Figure 1 (cartoon, rainbow, N blue to C red):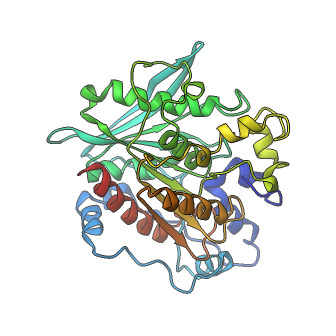
Figure 2 (figure 1 turned 120 degrees about the vertical axis):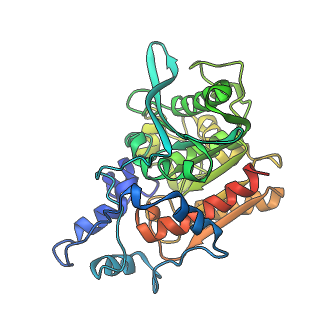
Length: 355
């Protein structure tokens, strides 16, 4: 999404970035076996057992660069999550699809909701935001998380938002802010604690999750989608490999960013580039942030995560930084890495949302 040398596919569909790498090499490596684990096999007790571990599930060994993952995949040491495979919803989770959370000039904004069927009291809420260079992807990309997080005591909404082909910045930010307001407006209906909402996203979704966390109350970003009487603030942010400062000179000619701003270059609208950069909005009151990024990310360079971590540290904001050596963009598409990532997310959310 950031580097000019990256293939356009990576910018448009970062969730499948690692999968494309494998496809490009499929004539020289063994055919891959995708994970076909069904949700029914990933029981609540197994998720709870993973959370109860004192240390996270181990990552694959001997990974120092992205090429090592290709070899591990070919050797069957790593499996990929098949996002196209049917994902059963456990009996203990209620799935409600196509809920309208907002409306912009007659254009409905939709989400899918996942909640535990049994609960005692109100639960923290999670807004999941998919990636795709602000121009593609779909909310079902995160169903793998949606059918797991409720097992740990969360009400989860995975949201769609307007892409840049329909409306440039700040439309997508306005939409996800509306989603938070919707969750807060419907907290009693769905048993959600309105004071314990987290935003989680990957790539472009990570950018939007940070915008939710760091720009509460910025009037020009709130939009008119609905529920204006409620706050769009969140109490925790999980940023998976998202860009944090898009004002840097090295990105001024980036085609994905040009599309994000309706074709306008940084020199034309520098204030808009600053307004769209999460790091611009950071203050010491920022909510706790979990940063997850791979050092071999050729789409959003890990230096973006380094900048964020440094600024959070400077401000004294609570944060954790999972910097994974040798991992590329969309690192959580691998089953083994996803388990490792979920362990960190569970512990982070438990610490800051269930106090």
